Image (cartoon, rainbow, N blue to C red; front, top):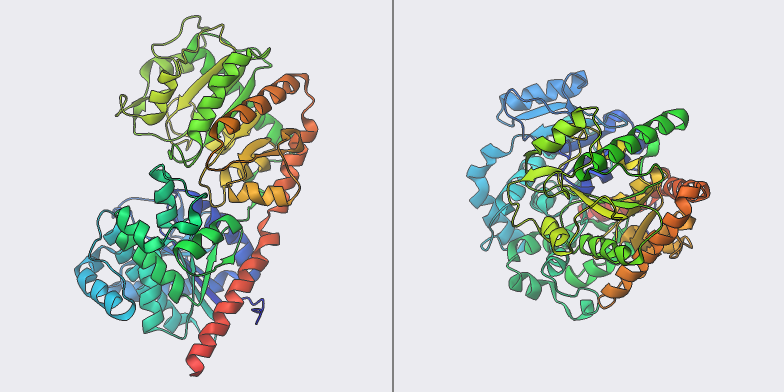
Length: 555
C-alpha cells in the first residue's frame, strides 16, 4: 500500500550536528528548518543536539534568551531532576526551538545501554572503539529528552515523529522504540558507515556493490559496532530514509532494507540579491586576487579565471585527487588566460602564515613569492598533509609566468581565519567556476550551494546532486549551469581529461563576459531544489512511519 502524505502533529529531530557545524548534515537540517517551522508551527518542532559547550561558553549557533516560556519552564524542571539541558533557538532561518543535552552523565549507564541493545535488537557493541561510545551515549540522552518532551507537550493520540540522523543517533532510536512505542520513529542515513569506509580504503564500491555484504565488510574494515547499530536502526525504524537513489541502492545492499528517498533541499534566502550580491562578488574577487599576489608575488590579470573546490578532506571520496590532477593537465594546455585554483579544504591548521598575513594587511605591491607559495596557513602536519604533498609532487611552484596556479587554503573559512577573514559563502561568490568531482557523495551540497550563488559548477554522476541534475537534462556542458561528468570505478583518467577540457573551454569564454546565461541557469537549478519542492518526500516517509506506529500500537 502506498503511504499517505502526512504532516506530523509534533516532530522531534535529533542529530550530532544540531547547533554544531561539522559537515553536510548541518546544511540539511539548518536549511530545512524554516520550511518545517512554516509547515508545522514553531511550537511543534524541536531540534535536539549535543551540549558541547563549557559552563561559560557561548555558541554562535544557539540562542538561549529566545526560548519560549513553556520550553524554559520544562528545561528548568528537568535540569533540577538531573537531565541537564539548555533550551533556546537555533540561529538559522526559521529560528526553530532547540534543546542541547549534556550527555556526559550518561556514560555511567553505557554498559547497561549496550546490554539492553544486545538483548532487544542484537546490536554488537563489543567491538566498539573511537567515537562509538560518544555517539551512542548522546543518542541515549537524546531519547530521554524526547520521552520527557513528549510527556510534557504532546496530547494523547497526537501523530508524533522522532527523526534520528546517521549512525550516531541509532542507539537513541532503538531505545525510544522499545520504551515509547507510541512515537513513530524515522532513521536517515546520509552515507552508510560501510560504504564510506569501502571508498575511504580505496576499494571499488560501484562495480562490486552487488557482491558486497554489509556484515562481512564491516568485520573486514574493523567497524562492526558502528555498522551494527546503523543496520538495526535502519531495520527497526518505522520509516527508513536516505538522500539519493545512488545511496538507496547502497543501503539496500549493505543495510538490507530499501529506504524512502528524501533528496536534500536548499534554502537560498541567505544568498544576497541584486546590488548587494554584486558588491559582495566584487569584494570577494578582489580579496582572492590580492591573496594570489601576496602568496606568489604576481598580481593576476583582472580577467583571471578563479576556480574553486571545497569540502571535508576526504581525498578520494570528494574527488580532490581529480581536481589537482585536472589542474596539472591544464598546465600542459597552456591556456591563454590565467586560471587559478583554490582548494578550500580544512586541514590540521596551526596558525595563519605570518609572511602572508603581513602582506595582506599592507597596501604594498609584491613582486617576489613567499617561501613555498602554494598554501596560506601553517600546518601541524606539513610533511604528512595529503593535499600539500600532492601539490608538491605535481610540481606546482606558482611562478609569475605560470598561467595555471593552485593555492591551498587549509582552514575553516568562518570569517576569522586571520588572512582572508571572509566566510566560505562570501568567497564562493567571487569564483567564476567550481569543481566537485566526487567519487562518493550521497548528495552534495557544495555544488548546489555554488549554483545558488550563480557560480557554474562541475560535478559527477556519482554524486546524488549530479545524478539528480542528469534527470533534469544536464550533461557535460557547464554553459548549462551545471556540468555532470560521467564517473565510474574505471575511468579516472578520462574524468581528469574531461574536467580539464571543460575548465579550459569555460576559461576561454569567461573573460569575454559571455557567461551571464550560465550563471542564470546555475541559479535556476538551485531554485528547483528548494525545500518547498522537496518536503513532500518527507511527508510521504512520515506518513508511512505514523501508519506503522499506529498499526503496532493497535495490536
